[in-house]
Image 1 (cartoon, rainbow, N blue to C red):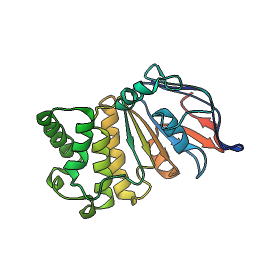
Image 2: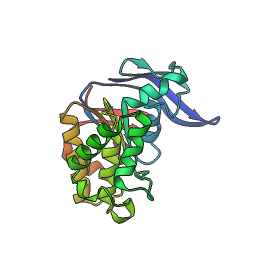
Image 3: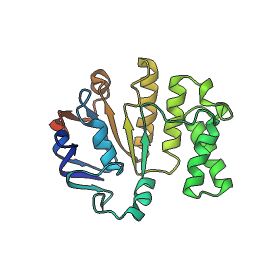
Length: 221
């Protein structure tokens, strides 16, 4: 589902964010990407949904070569990939439902179908009763669940999560992970970046460890 072949990413002349990274993440896997601050986790995720291009190496996502993909085909790639950010990136002046509706509009989803999908996803994340409220009135855990629902609006084959529990306490973090495991059980491939070693140990999933931009451990190979 996601393959990286000897990927390097350098910023400027001498800032090496990733060095010789090769990975093979299979369809339906739930994989933790760990490492300290500056290890290269966010850079790797950004390369997968082509927010960045590698300095060298190749990246395949659902059999598409991300590096060689024409710009006109990038939107189609991103429709296959849902992204959850640590800081949620919700539009705070819009309601919960409106945050999701904007995605539906960008996808060209018919209005009636969009309303059904929004209702279904908010019910799944336990927030249907907060649909008409703005994110300002939600807790951090609730905002993260809205971000998850938004990432699922396009029925992604792949879900990338960048420190989705980083701003949450242990109980709320467990709720988010439980929800993501349910999404994974329905067939979505998940790559989750986190520096939380305790969380990773508790979940007992495949773990890829980055250090200074290099893969130093992968218990799934």
